[in-house]
Amino acid sequence: MSTSTSLRDLLFPIGLLLIAMASIQSGASLAKSLFPVIGAPGTTAVRLIFAALILLAVLRPWQTRITLRNLRHVLVYGISLGLMNFLFYMSLRTVPLGIAVALEFTGPLAVAVFSSRRRVDFCWVGLAIAGMVLLVPGVHSAGGIDVTGALYALGAGVCWALYILFGQKAGEAHGIQTAALGVAIAAICIAPFGIYSAGNELLNLGILPAAVGVAILSTALPYSLEMVALTRMPARTFGILMSLEPAIGALSGLLFLGEKLALNQWMAIAAIITASVGATLTLPRQPAATAAAD
Image (cartoon, rainbow, N blue to C red; front, side):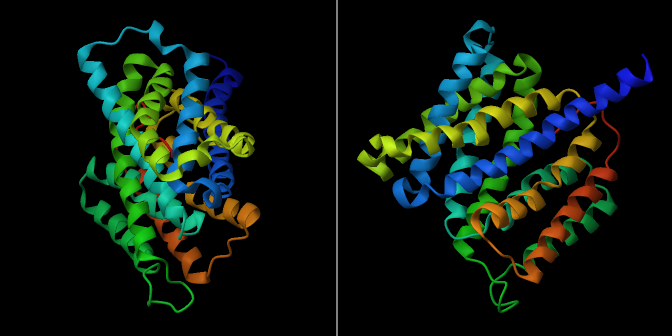
């Protein structure tokens, strides 16, 4: 293998992952603009429904053979994906985008730490906890956040951890078509909540452009790219790059939503990012990636 080929093989999945992260956070900013019209549950529902339609049409997952064992992995992957999106959007109602992403990111961090269980990992856990403490209301007068919104984000992190564990298992069997299957299951699970919450507002054609944009930016495009990147780069590289997502979320919130963070909030995000990078760098080397983004 030539040096140029080797470099291309390395840069290709890295580029895919960076595009996926930027796409997700841009889509989250756009999604927040729909909250006043159809609410967070309605926005989650239309995002997943449109994304499922797009991915089903493009990837045609019915052409792949699914065994009973693999179906279990796909079902858990899809359900966790739906709940992750729902809880994350619920958090965005009261929590800035960058902070919500940072809190949600404790899910992948927990997966990385618990897969190792070495003494050094307690340092990274402590640093992540210190970051979360900086966000607790009352610790800093200008830096407190809504407790309910923070709990929603942490709940999304739990679902993200399940998404990682079962997404990898399902992806090994079905590749990129797993994204279509998972999003379709997620849409079926979340649609009733969105319909109940938003009602007839979901039929408002005025939301169609934004809804399709959110579906593409936040789901169809990034999840497909991530599923490709999952199997084409080392876990260490994948984890380090994924650690940038809270910062990308904060910048996206600043650029598109005008969400300015206090100094202690930036410090909290930096602490969580550092904990994630540290946990990734001290992991034993693995041949394939083990995480994916929201």
